[in-house]
Image (cartoon, rainbow, N blue to C red; front, side):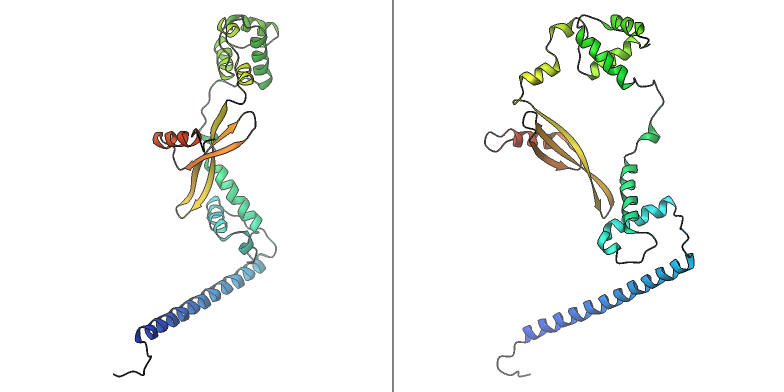
Length: 245
């Protein structure tokens, strides 16, 4: 078939496809809006049936609403006359994250921990009396009415970086070491960030370094699971002679 001069068959075909795609998108969007409008009206009817009574949700129902609601976002949640407020749904989401890493149910019974004030007393007595060993500290605490065993004192001093006697009186304390080398020492640690993905909540680890003198913080990297080669490369980046932290 002959076509008029300047007639581009390929361009006309592309335009037809574009119009078809636009028409399909508009049709799908209209159907989605219709479904959303129906769900809104259904929620209104349900709330009228409740008559102001509060619904009781199971833990599984709260979890499902929290995950879906977090994906939708607070602003769009506010556009719906839902069964619960957006603030409630997002609060359930925060509780879901906290519950994921709550290890209280897995804790085992064991020896009771030392009270904070007693632990501080043990540390102060050890620092003020560097020649006192574990047995001497046990006796001194017993005179004050505190019954604490040698192994407990040993764990407390180790937790605070204090050496046993007589080395405690001969070596530089950690506090003195930091004060002496302030400006040359940095501390590093991880903190976790929860990310909502298509597969659910995923925890990412963020490695950060802080200069102890200036309190300046540098992010070393973000990773799902830290491993040796990754840590080595982060160390190279942080200690680089030109761009390092």
